[in-house]
Image (tube, rainbow, N blue to C red; front, side, top):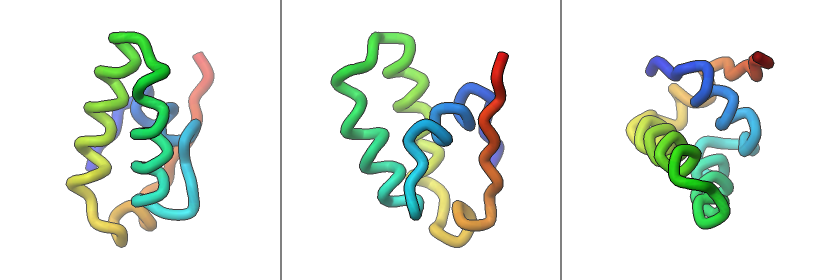
Length: 66
């Protein structure tokens, strides 16, 4: 699965021990996000939900500063 830099940064912010917990943390934050950030989060969640746990565990997520 390919993630954009913005998606990876978002995942790094809400990263937890596993894919399902990361999804849960990101989903819980949705109500506090503005429109653009919410759209990015929903796009990221969609990709995370399509991944398997094994794919997530094998993925390296890196926070990139601008």
